Length: 309
Ligand SMILES: [Zn+2]
Image 1 (cartoon, rainbow, N blue to C red):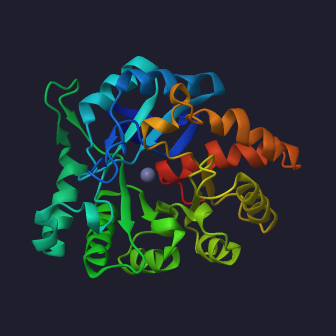
Image 2 (cartoon, rainbow, N blue to C red; image 1 turned 180 degrees about the vertical axis):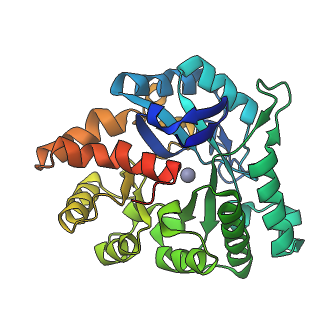
């Protein structure tokens, strides 16, 4: 039985139910221009995320990585208090958030840094267990256009993911350059079924999504409910078109909660929005239960577990 690594230890893949494939439970991207770009109120996060359990969702892939305020001790705390399996990430975001040392580092040094995290784990001060092994390389970011620094990190991340045998998912800025990300990852030898290209719902271009899926890689519509960036009407149309084109086994959904304002208690849509509001709308346009469950359970399980099908 394949296992996935979580912040509280390994879990058999067959114990994974519904999955949120691209989320944040603790993140800090605040800066003087946007002091609220953070999710550090763990009490509020626990309350919001705990609602997932009543929708049969027991796993959250937490893609906050180095440079984004990752806090593995808080993730362990949230996992214990919600009962959620939380998969932590190793990686770097887009160039603006790269640590200074990454700018100077060779691709080999970056690859080795990520590989050590994936293989040996990351020590957690006061943690239980005291070491966490990330289960995914994410959210590897690129801007538009992709900068040379970002390409360097993407290639290094690809090599580390391939060597460690873990999946990799990306942040494609506003959906841009997903095909180029995929091309680079494939060049570096990552198997397509271990690749997920992120934020594609922000790019209303079904041909790009089909091209990604046709290689065997996954497409993420992972900002569901962020209507200021894209309307859910568009997302529903995209989901339906992908399924009708035969790519329902290559698509995954999430809501990418990334600041307090998105929590239900602060007037936002919250983690459970996906199950409470969005999935019923998919049913409403005629998609059947099997097609919908693929998006939130079967596909993430295959992606995380390494099943090539
Ligand atoms: Zn994100």
